[in-house]
Length: 269
Image (cartoon, rainbow, N blue to C red; front, side, top):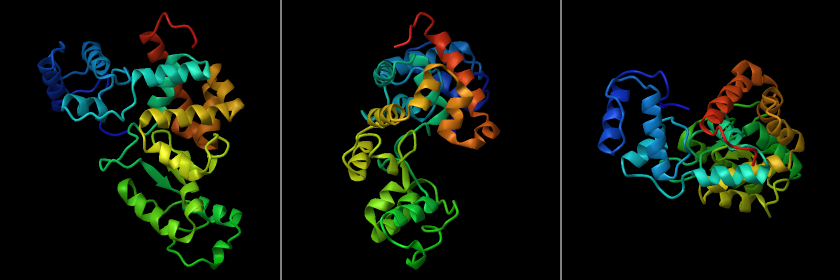
């Protein structure tokens, strides 16, 4: 996740944040160092805003400080509800949100964040009874190999081309929202159709977190790994075999420990 300010950060951006925090009525040292006192001030602002209280200053916290926050952002209550539904500690949900989410569930234009997977579209067309080798489409949209990513809002351009070939297969071939859950999981997650899944992702980040709850409930092995804080098993199940190369398990363990320290009296939900 880009543009995050967290413990140990230094420089002008931190100094500006500290000034903004003080103007907002929470005390932060004007040192240019993102220390624990600054993190506590950020958590106080996040609590006031109803945002996830992680002490990390990212786009949502900045949006609130700038007066731009919307009701579609993930809240502390959303996190608590998800923890209760999955029977895991709040710290576990916060760790997954911190490490496995994109940080923002929506683009600046208000549409859900997506990533279109052209190699998945190849397979979904096959499942729809269409031979992808006979379909005329740009290689950026249809290919047996992963890639062709455009990023950001441009991903919707790739999706639009695919939808003209086969709408449902195209929607199934994109990952959606904060936790980038693929559309083809719609049935396992209990949605009535892939279109229903996509429409729900437009409602807000709380609904996107509920998709994660549904996804984990449909994957008992993954859910049990989360409940037991078996981070290598969870990271492998969520990210695939290359999880260790990106240190996802170590990042999850560190995040869980950090958030557990913020909720020392918490029992598993």
